[in-house]
Image: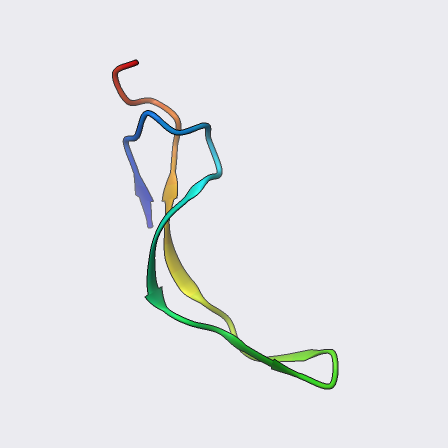
Length: 41
């Protein structure tokens, strides 16, 4: 999900569910909210 933020575009704002990796393979990707960089500066 993307949200308006004062942070640069692509910055992780919030972690909803952590991801897991084992042996170099992603078992479950993380679910995060990412800044779209269009907040009021």
